[in-house]
Amino acid sequence: MPSALDPRVQAVLDIPLHRFLEVGLREEQDPSAGIRFPVGPAAQNPAGMLHGGIVYALLDVASFLALLPQLSADEHAVTHDVAASLLRPVRAGAVVDLSATVLRRGRAVAFMRAEATVDGLLVATGQVTKTVLTPR
Image 1 (cartoon, rainbow, N blue to C red):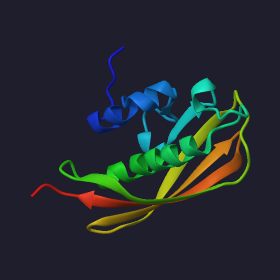
Image 2: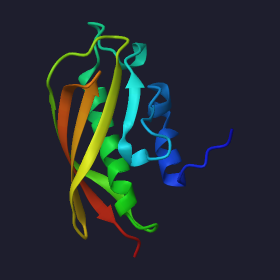
Image 3: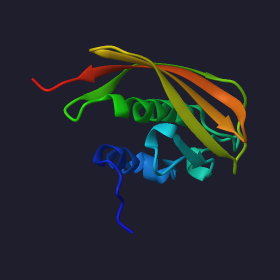
C-alpha cells in the first residue's frame, strides 16, 4: 500500500540506517508522536545490549519529527547539539519508544527534550538543539 506520509517524514524513515534498524512511527497518523524500534542484532553492542550510539542518533530523529509540524514547507532543521543520558541498559529483543517535545522554537534555533522508554520505563533522556535553515 503506498504511503500517504508527508514526504519529509517518509525521507526520514527511508534513511538506510533507519531502515536497517527497523525504525517505524509510533503513530502512523501523527509522526510527531515519535518512533520505535526493536533491539535486534543491528542495534546491539558486543554484550548483547542496546548500543548507546543508536540511542543518541534516534533521540535526534524523534526530536526532528516533533519539530517538523512547526517548520514551514521551505524550512529545514539540522542538528546543532545533542546531549543524552543513558539511564539503564536495554536487553536484546526489547522495543524502544522514543518521543520528543519542542521546548522552544525561535527564528533560527529550536530546543527539544527527548525520551526513550521500554515498556513505559525511562531508559534515556536527551536535549537536542537544531538550527532552522531557510532558503535564501
